[in-house]
Length: 337
Image: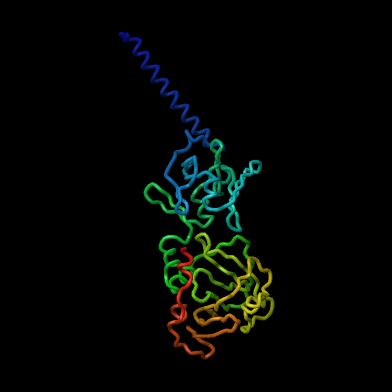
């Protein structure tokens, strides 16, 4: 069949006009989507890389999307992957995720406040910003090839140190991590003085849990779900409303299970506690090393720094290592099983 030249030219013109019209319509849809609250995936978002949480691919029928310049993931599968509860309050236009004591809240996107955490709705799915929410929950993000790894703070090299290292390496690595809590922290009180102090106590032979005293609050920190998790707290005396005294013993009430405002299960002590206790002013401080026996007797084994009591300073192995000479690790293999 022969196509006449005039008809052919008119057909090309019509196709060109149609192409321009479709382009204009597409741009209008994108601009409208940028101004509205509901995102249309085909025009406002792009499917991107895979997300892996705790070593497992994000179990979702809908893939992550790049929306308004942010990598967004579907709410439900992400919350389930990190072990958080979630709620979408349609009336209040509020999404809440809760894993720790302080929940993460997101509101609908608004031009009035671009700094707050926001969520997006695409079809029947609620999408949340992967990086912002992960960081608020304490996770780290690493991009490898076509994947984004979402991992708890105890992973990679530090995980190997904590689980497989000796007592010296594991205890040092664990102490350096910030603790999280599923319960609101008890407010600590501090004396009206420049005196500074810190207390760390590990059960003998262990590196995966320790006790620490902050002001008048004693906490138990344990490795849970890849996090340093506070599982117990209680007030161990409140001398700070009175004149501060060096003879105050913050451990007495705890060891007798008489701490006030306790939350969490009181930990039974079936082995001695190895302690590191530092006190002093600025650079002029003393660190004491020793242990507390099962029957609550204190055994001071050495000091470091600027001893004010005339105690010997020749126990260098204990001072440098925060480990008793006869200690061997007992919790590493058990934790890996």
